[in-house]
Every structure is written in C-alpha cells, then in structure tokens.
Image (cartoon, rainbow over all chains, first blue to last red; front, side, top):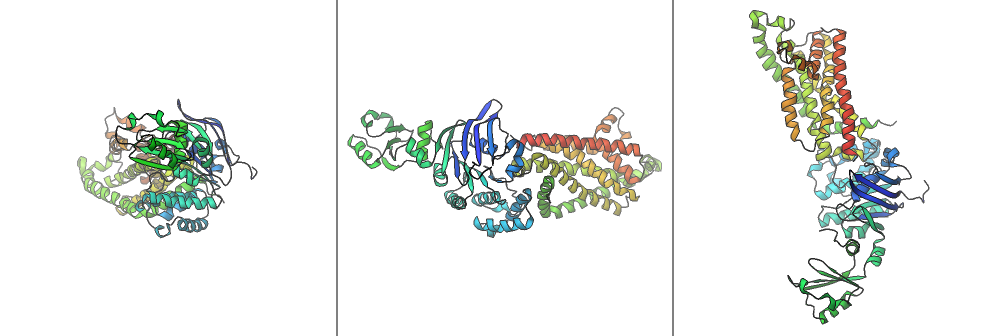
Length: 311
Length: 262
C-alpha cells in the first residue's frame, strides 16, 4: 500500500450473530496518524466493529481492508502490526507487570532483549516502573488499564485499537490515561477507539462516527458534528418535581432553535445561552437551576437518535 | 529464526510455572509417597499373604507394590491432566482471559491448542518422572525398561487432557467440572485396573473398562514397567490412547475457534 492509502477501509461492513445484526453495513476509512473514534451507547455495534478490525471476528458481509490486507486470509500478518486494548482486561494477574509484557512480546516473537528494552520504556511512560516486579493482582484498576495499554504498544504497532479505554475508571485515573493517549497521538500513532463518553471522544478524536443500532448516524470531527447537528450553546433548565410537565413550551418556542425535553431537564439549543436565560425568565419560567454551556457530542447524539448516551 | 507460534504459547505457561513449580514438585512427590506407603506397603503386605500365600500369583507373580506402582503412575497422569484441562482452561477464557489476549496477536486459536497440550505434556512429564523415581525408592521398579512407562504415562494423561480441554472450552462456568471429576474421572481411577486386575470385575462390566483410555494406559505402563509386553499389545494400547489425543486435539481446535473467533 502507498503511504497515503487509508490504514482501514470498510465498505458495507456487516456483522451478524445468528439472526441478530450487530453491525449493519457501515462505511468508514481511517487515515494514518489519525485518532478515530466510534461513539455510541452500549449495543451500538462498536465492539463488534473493533473485533472485526482486530481480525478476531470474521466479517459477515461487506469488505474490510487493514493495511490493504484482508483479515480473512492475512489475520496473523495484520495482527502483528496492531496493538489491541480490549474492553475487559486480559492480563495474567498471577504474573508480574514485567512478565506480562514479556509473554505478550513473545507472542509477537520479539527477542527477549528487545522486549526488556521496550518494557523499561513503556513502564516509564505509563508510570508503572516502580511496580515492574509486582503481581498484577495487586494493582489498582487504573494501573491495570495503563498496563493493558502499555502491553498493546510492546510491538510498536502502527495502529492501536482501544475498546472503551477508560470505562470503569475513576476520574483521576481516567485523566491519567487520556494524558498518555494524547502523547501517543502526538508521536504519530494511529488510534482507533470506542467510547460512550463524549468528553473522551472530544478530547482524543480528530474524527469520529456516531453509531446507533449497528449503523453510522453521522461522521465528522467533533467540532463539525456539533456545528452541523447542534447550536453553539445549550441552556439547561431544571425545575422542581412535577413542574416541568406543566410548562407551556409554546411560550418560549421562539427563544431557541430547538428544545429537547429530558425526564429531568429542559434543553434549549441556542447560540447565546445567557441571552436565552434572560428571555425565558421574562416570560415567567422559574427554573430551580439554570446552566448555559457549550454544545457537546452528547447533544449531537441526542439530536441524531433522540436518546442520551449513558443512561 | 522464527519461533513456532505454539512454542510461544508454551512459553507463557513456563513463565507462569517458574512461580509455581516448587509447590507442584512437592505435591508430585507426596502423592506417590502417600499412596505407595499406604496401599503398596500397607495394603500390599496383606494382599501378598492372601489366598493362602498365592495372592502374588494372581498379580502375575509380582508383589502388590510392584503391581500397583505403574498403574498408579498412569492414573495419576490422568488426574493431573484432568486438573490442568479444566480450571486453567476456564481461566483462559473467562477469568484471566489469557487466550483472548493471545488471539489479539499473531497467534491463532489452533496454535493455542497445540501450545496448551504441549504444556500439559511437559507438566505430565515432570510429575510422572518424579513418581517413577519415588516408586524406585520404594523398590517397586524391577527393570530398566520401566523408564518407558514415562512416555506411556504422559500419553495416557494427554488422552484425558485433550478431550477435556476441548470440553472445557464449551463451558461458561466451572460448575460441571466437579461432576466430571466425581462421576467421570474418579470411577475410572477406581475401576480401570489401577488397584486390582480388571479380571476381578463382573464379566458384564469388563468391556466398559476396555473402552476407557485409563485401562489402556494402566495396562501399558504396568507391562512396560514389568518388562512383560508383546509388541501387538503395546501397539493396540498406543493406537487407542493416540486416537483419544488426536480426536481431543481436533475437537479442541474447533471449540477454541468457536469461543475465540466469534
């Protein structure tokens, strides 16, 4: 393949489990050096797509090329150039941190001396150097996750696949992981990740697709998607219990481009949240809390699917 | 030089075994000591005096200890292989998930099966070698050809390990393993000629013993250890045991692929 050719090309890519269609004819391309995200709720087909790209799940329909190769016939050759961070950790918790990198490096048939070199670098980079000799069992959830990501880099992959890299981590551990992933991106490593956290997608992804029900609902950079499917700002209004249901929305219909009624709050899509807040107040609305904020991918998702990302 | 993928899978188990080998060697040593002392010497002295002193004749002229040790060697191999093929295999799929980690690399599911069974063979080799050494200390080994019982016992173990590994890959929980041990492996352990010649079994159930891999393994190990086996008999045993290993290995290749490549 030529350097400008995309690393991943999917055309009408489909995954079926029996009669259930998990991925329903999706098209996308990932370019070298890009950070590409699949954003969507649980069950959207993100993980199934990732497993097909990772060459562990046979394609049911459509075409998929990774590095210009066919996963069906060239699985091991493709996987040799991938780094995979699965959704659930697959570390051998009875072994030490360094031993986990050793056995994984050996799966790639790397020389032991080279693995040792990479281990030192990676444990340093992921702030695990002091734990090299400790059993994985004893590490915190955040450390295990960092180790899983470090392990995925041992073979110096051209493409790193991460399935929900920070799900289940506390905010601090999460930011530590993001920081490291951001640095990787700076080094030019191509990242493909799935997430149902919009802040994760916004922080890390140059470009993303919004998935829902096995299909792609939209594609673009986070900023593009927000521009296209949302307004600059959002005004969030919360009311006392039972009040929201009694409101007459017609009164404020002209205040915002669009109004979304969620079970616990009202969202007004507008380019100027503060101005809208003032008008709403003039018209007799008495919310218990008012928040004017920038639009996020959550709003894009809500607009595209009518549902929130994380219930 | 590229290392074959199955060997790289084996390496993982060897790294893990570096931490666990002491305990496993101690138990490999204690099992035969306990069994040979209690049954070989204790029960044996009683058996040898039985039938008005003709007990030994019914065991082919050997003392009970000499009769028991190689049979127990084969039966122990079957038990160790069963243990290695149940919970650790479940761990690879469900708990630690190390098999899932391996297939994300250039390793294929078939490589994992070959590597795993090679690991079992290695583990069995250590166990039965220690066992035979202990037997020799007890005076239960009479001919140098007894060393041939080592590969024979490894093969016997794999005849259990390969099909049970295939089976374990189809399970979602370890609930069935206890039943497999209690109602599958334990009856075989007791009734496959390990402790008494199967000629003692009622004629109606004797054919059952002939189709179990353990009887073939016990008879093969025993006759090799006693230096009393015809090539034809040895071949039948080898063929029977090998058939279990090959069929089990092929089945495992399918069940592993189904589990890992959804």
